[in-house]
Each structure stands twice: as C-alpha cells, then as structure tokens.
Image 1 (cartoon, rainbow, N blue to C red):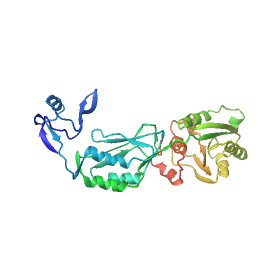
Image 2: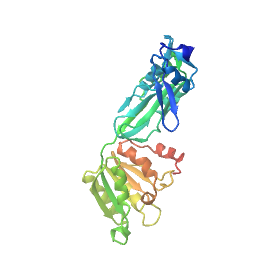
Image 3: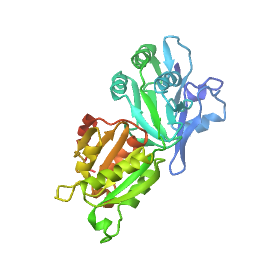
Image 4: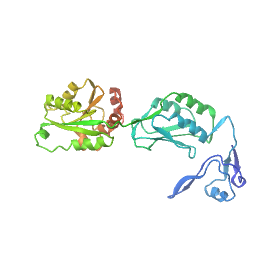
Length: 323
C-alpha cells in the first residue's frame, strides 16, 4: 500500500474500511475496502479527519487485514459456530444454537502471544443464545507479514479452539426435603425457583417429590424419579450441617461417584454434585432460594449441555467465586 493525499486519490482503490463517527448518531464504515474514490468523497473524507489515505498495492508477502482476519476466524470455526465477513478488518464468530461455549484457553493464549494478532472470546462455559456473538479476531496493522498469521494457523491446526455444546433438553426430577415442608408447617418456595431456572436451559420436569428429613426416604424419592426416567435430579433442603440435614448423605449413598460436597463459591458453599452413571444428582443449598446469583447459575448451563464436571473445575471456581 502507499500513502497519498486525499485530494490526489480520485480514481484510486481504497485499501481498507474507513470508519465515520457521528457522536450520538452512528459509528460505522463510511467507505469500504475496494471503494473507488470519487471527487464527491473528498469533502467527506476531510470531515472525517483524513488528510492522507492508504491506497491498495498488492504484495504477495503480506496479508491485508481482512484476508488475515478470515484466516484467524477459521481457527474458531468449531461445532455449531458460523463466521461473518470481515467488517473494518475484524471477523466475528457466532453460535448457531442455544448452548454452552467451550474455549480451549491454552490454544487461545498461544495465538494471542503472537505479536500483532488478537482474538477475544467470551469466557469458557458461558451460556450463549442462538446467533449470539462468541468471539472477534483481527490483526493490529492494516497490512501484516504472512509469517505471524501462518504461525497462528499452525498452532490452531487440528485443535478445537471453540465449540458450542447445545442444551440436551434433559428430563428433570425434583426432590424437596424437610419436615417443615412435608408436614405443611411452611410453604415450599424453593421448588419454583429451581423450575424457573432449569426451564431457561430447555429442561422439562417429569416429577416432583416431597420428603421428610429421613435419609432413607430421601433416597427412595431420588430413586423413584430415576425409575420414572429422570436424567438429572435436583434436591433442595437439608444441605447444611444441622442434625436433620441428611440430604448430602442420601445423595452420596444413591450416587456411584461424588464430585464434591462443598464449593469455593459464595453464595453456594454447601453445594453438592454427584453422579449415578451419567445422571447428575445435585444438592442445592438454601441460598439458591433467595440469592439472585449462586453457584447454581454457574453450574446449571453445563449440566444442561451434559458437560461432565470434574472436581478440579469446582476447585478452580474460587477465583471469581465471590458472587
């Protein structure tokens, strides 16, 4: 590319998109890459503060920003993801379904360690709506040597940098524990909170059972819902450390693998997650009933996408876990 004065650019091909900002009105590309500059464009360009502009000259040893962005965007083209054409040198990636974003953070960091290249994503394990933006990528200069872009391509080759796990429309069973609810001493206000949250991720309720604080009864209710076809179980009540709090013990005896009882998240320290085969059994602490955001909101999208959760991942949640 070469630099020319705006007044001398008539008939030349514009090298890149040029953004016009009108405060309070708009911000966007006023002229696109490839635009042939006309005499009537000169006052507009000057009003945009452009005294000199870049004119396109092809150089096979370099990538134009749009071409480079396309190469980088291809690295993020994983499962259920689509890419739009470059705009002002940037390519954006979007989800084609409602689901959970998974990011290979190690590969992303390697790509971003290359000078003059950037890719920004939503956080891994973020719930994403259909057509929601998940990432954007570009190179910093207008024209870049091929080497750094090609290096990024090599790093990302055969790697699943980004993917969207669609929600699996799981059948959910709910167990409400506590003598106070079972015997009608207080109204159950916990179950509706769980219902409202799980519906956001495509789960359907196949049954709800009340139980006393008796551990054997809690176990029976969990097993009954599994027999009815529940693919996930939510247990509320009895998750603390009082003598009547027997829900963790019941979950532990029904499950064949306990991920955790306790989490480094507030609100949500008394959270429990276990599995019976592939069926998650979730113990929800009382904070879920009255706090706007708890560990339940962090874990639920992953459960809805059948993203198997490991204990190490729960431990890592302490950083940022003060909600």
